[in-house]
Length: 219
Image 1: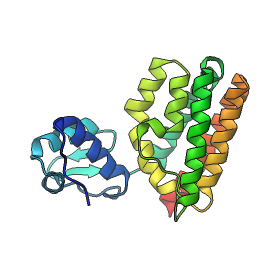
Image 2: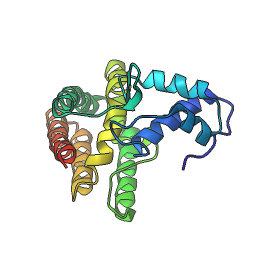
Image 3: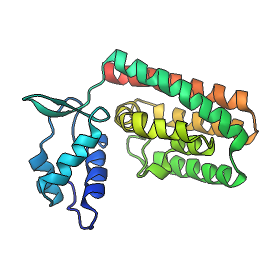
Image 4: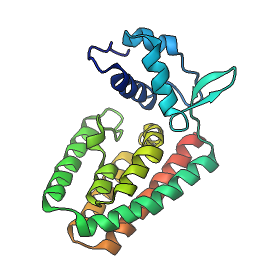
């Protein structure tokens, strides 16, 4: 059950809560979203909810005349296109990070992945999940690349849809631990200042994630 909002910035907080509700599985892909239900559970008016859903159109939701707003549902072709973009953009991000990442970032990334390792071990179904944007390894690599256009592209076009896909694919048997191992391999290549190796490791990781996501939507 969602918790009522208690802070002053309703629009921003409502947006974050709606994103969390959709990407945590509160709503299934293709399910209709009720503005009144969300407003009631969050303890706010429908205005901020409506604004949040408008911001998420094309990212997490689709609006159909007379049918209302529904959670985006991926078909095979849409999923493939998303991963083609990810492989190209994030592969380049890893390449740039191998050159531009600071020693402090590398230390932070290592600590982050070790924290992810603990979370996976403590998870009943060993799903690979994290609570905030700052704990996302892929976005962290994009930031380490020091290329604003890459970071902006991932945040505006890819990140929200990726969270829905992770919800499904990360619970595939063994996938969470495999993904974590792949993240460590990417970090090792960045740490070694090996652009070719970092890009190759990231591309391979995303291809494996793509295959896992395809299996998940087939299931």
